[in-house]
Every structure is written in structure tokens, then in C-alpha cells.
Length: 363
Image 1 (tube, rainbow, N blue to C red):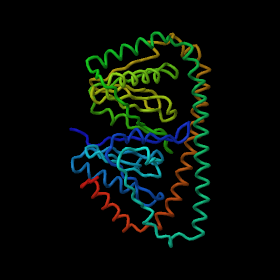
Image 2 (cartoon, helix red, strand yellow; image 1 turned 180 degrees about the horizontal axis):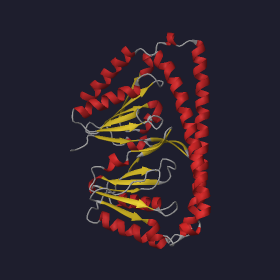
Image 3 (cartoon, one colour; image 1 turned 45 degrees about the vertical axis):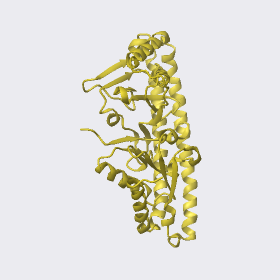
Image 4 (tube, rainbow, N blue to C red; image 1 turned 90 degrees about the vertical axis):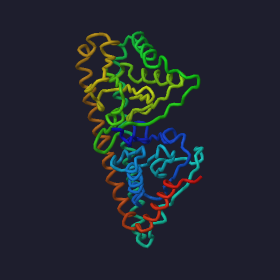
């Protein structure tokens, strides 16, 4: 059975602040429908209704989830129609950067401003200030966690045989790409498979790789060359004209955690915490960078130091998650004011217009 839905994130709350990948994720579309207006006016609900209705009609849909509330949507792409819908507020979508035809739908028009008193407006502004502070604390804590992670990596980097790591990478390039080269270079599509959420790490690895024939689970330690291997593989794929989906790390978007090669029906990914999985079907295999490229006994040599770093790292990640949970609670308060003042009969009319644009697309 072919799954008609793919699930991603294209923004994340990271150690480098709010990070957006919509420009790459929405590349190559003919049309992008941008929903403007404040949160709480029904944008996410309408995006899901439209996405689900297309899936029910047998069309493939790409769902883009909110890292603050993974059950809500920031956007969607109707794959065959080459039409995207995105919440302009959530995506920081820069319309001028897109070659696609862009149409804006103002959900702010559904607000009955009589339902928002001057006092309420003051409360909303105060909450927005608190929301900014909560996000700042989140990013600061994640950044500190990443610095601790860098300390963790140093023990293993010093024990790495980079010659062996390079050899492994070159062997993979030959094995994966031989016979599939194209004279025209490709452009990788950049996405997140997961995100840091108020309830902890969340990912879609299993669903994204479920239909693939081959999955390579990279095992190892921080600093054992997993992200570097993936970056080299991605660059080689682009040079050889092989389609590649490039998945960034939800904590450090400068690092990579997974590559999917749709035409090769293959994936290779960092299968360590917080997205640790193990082979469970034919076509699954493990690539252990610790065993193949690390000085034996490194874990034991630095056991005490690494244990202390792990404890500090875990505490800081929990702290960041608590700040993100506080941000979600504040955001929910803000949303509730706008929801109470929204005329949903107008929202329904906007939904019908969007539905018409999807079912009867005309540039």
C-alpha cells in the first residue's frame, strides 16, 4: 500500500534560534498560497482540512508540522498539483524570494475587532513580550547544551581515525551512486525530520523511511564523524545529479542527521539519541562509526568525564524544554483571545476559496 502522506518540519527551535527551511522545502512549486493573520484565526485547522481532503481523493500531500504543537500544521504541499499552502506567520515566508505565483489570504479579515477590547489588546501585547522572553531563554539553553555537547565530542574526536572515516565515506559513495550518475547536477531539498517540542524530541523518521528498500542506521558517538559523512554524501549526490533530501539536526541546523535518496529507495541516518532506532526488517543495516573508525576503549578511558558531561547536557536540554513549554502556554493564551474574536463563518468562506484554488488551479 502506498502512503499518500509525507510528514516534515520546515522550521525548528534550535541552539541557533528559530531556523526556517521553507525556501528549500517549497522550491519548484507553481503556486504558493500564503495565509496571513494572527494565530488563533483557524489557519492550521484549514490547512489540515484541505490536506486531508486531498489525501481522501488519492492525491499525495506533504504535511509540514508546527514544532510548538506537532499536531498542528504550518503548511502543506499538494505534490501533484505543485501548489503549497503556508502560514505566513509561522514560516517567515519571503514572497519576493519565490519564483512561484503567490496569492495571499488574509485570515485577519475574520477578526471582529469589537471582540477585542483596549484592555485585551494591552494584555496581548504584554503576553507577546513574555513569549519573546520565553523563546530567548529556550534558545539560550539550547545553545548552552550545544556547547556542552561540543565538550563531549572532543573526547571522541581525539580518538578518531579520520583516514578510516574518509574511506568509509568513499566506499558508500561508490556503492550507493555507481550507475545512477547524471550529467546535470541536482539541488538538494533541505528539511527537518524532527523538532524540539515542549514535550521533548519528536521525529518522523519511521514514516519517512517506511516505503524505502534500504535503510542504513549510523551508530556512533558525538564527534565520530556522522554529520561529516552525511555532508560529504550529500555534496557528492548533488554533483552526480542524484536527487537527495537533506535533513538537518533539530538542535544544531548546521549539522545533518539524515539523507533520503528517493530514486535509489534508500536512506542513511544518524540513529542515535534522541532519534535512536534499530533494524527491524529486510534492507536495514548498521554502520557503526565507533567500531570502524574509533580507537578501541575510548568509552572506558573517559567514562567518568563523559558521564559528568552527559548529566550536564541532559539537565540543560530539560531546562530548554521547560522554557519551550512555557512559550507554548503563553502562545496558547494569545491564541485564545484571537479565537474568541474570530468570525468563523468568514473563515469557512476563506476555506472554500482555498479549496477552489486547489481543485481548479488557474495561474
